[in-house]
Every structure is written in C-alpha cells, then in structure tokens.
Image (cartoon, rainbow, N blue to C red; front, side, top):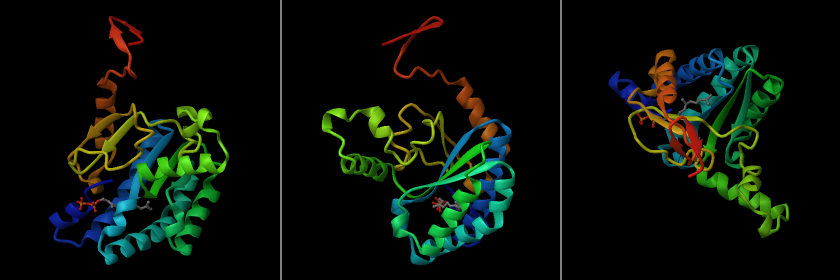
Length: 227
Ligand code: FPP
C-alpha cells in the first residue's frame, strides 16, 4: 500500500493524512475484492523496516490502526470479512495486540473473504520464524522440504497469492511474502495507494487475465508439458 506520503505531499498535507486516506482505500479495496469473489487479500501495512521511520510517524500509524479497528471492524465483520494479522506481535503495544486479537476473534467465523494484515512483517522474518518453529518442534533435517516449511509459515492458512500488486510506482517486492509469491504474477502501478479503488483493481485483474501462467512448465501449442 505504497504512496500515502506522496499523495499527502501533493496536497500540502502531513504524511499522516495520507495514511488516514490509506485506511479508507483499504476498506474500499477489501469490499471490492469480496464483491469480485476474491477469497484472500493480504496487505502490507507495516514492515519490519518501518520502525526506522520518524518516531511521530510510527506512533501516528499505531494510533491510526487502533482508530481504524474501532471505526471499521463492525462494518467489515458484517460484510463477511475474516481478519488475520501476520507478523511479529512481540514488539507492538499491549493495546494494539488486544485490538488485533479482538479483530481476529470477532471475525473468525466469516468465510466470504480473508483479509490478512501484514504488520511488523517481513518475508525474511517469516522464513526464519518458520525454521525456528520447525526446529523447536523437533523436525529432523531430512524431513524438511518445501511443503513442510510452508506449514510453519505465518500464512499457512492461505493459498499462495496469484496476483501481487504494488502501488506507488516502485518496482520491487521489498521483503513482502517472499516465500509465498514464488509464482505470483506481479503488477506494478503508479497509482498512489489512497487513490486505489475499483478501477485500479479491475485494471490489475485484467492485466492478470492476460498473463500466461506456466509455473515452470513449457507451453507447446494448447498443451502444457513439464519443462
Ligand atoms: C506506505 O506509504 C504505507 C505505509 C508504510 C503504511 C500503510 C498503512 C496503512 C494504509 C494503514 C493500515 C491500517 C490498518 C488498519 C491495517 P509511504 O508512507 O511509504 O508513502 P510514500 O512512499 O509516498 O512516502
């Protein structure tokens, strides 16, 4: 969800204003995905590296998340959204941790769409924590394979993403879902996150539909063969 700061700057407003609009774009996008039958949406809300931002921006973001949970939780729950949080919770405040727990427990029964919020998350962190969990569970080295490690990843409850969208014009993955995005189709857009909505989502889905997904196979005519 990149581009909040630039969106605000263009309007001579503080960065926080951009993040605030970013929350509205998130709610809009979750509902747009649900309307289109998309069952899983995962958003990068706060990376392991975002702690390096100025203290007032970090605390502003933490406060914003608390406000967003109290403002939108009932609406999202009502619209069939199941919320899951992925990331290292040990570093966030007790207040935020209990807001996450409330968001997860009050939506656990929903099945229309799962919104996973990656918060204090990093793709490399996820791989490391999965290895640690496997070791702690006493898994023997010869039993470690891709399927086994996938089961220890923070998002083991969800299928791997088909489509990976980055807003804000940067063309990199920035440590998001490194393991899970191995075969995701990547779409980069200049659209700044607060402006993201139905039209941009549909454009990304149309781009996805044009892609030729091979998963490492070679296509010969209409038939796909292992390559
Ligand atoms: C990146 O834009 C955005 C973030 C670091 C924060 C995204 C967070 C939200 C939209 C709020 C999430 C809220 C909930 C409830 C999960 P940037 O600041 O890097 O923008 P810039 O690249 O233009 O400076």
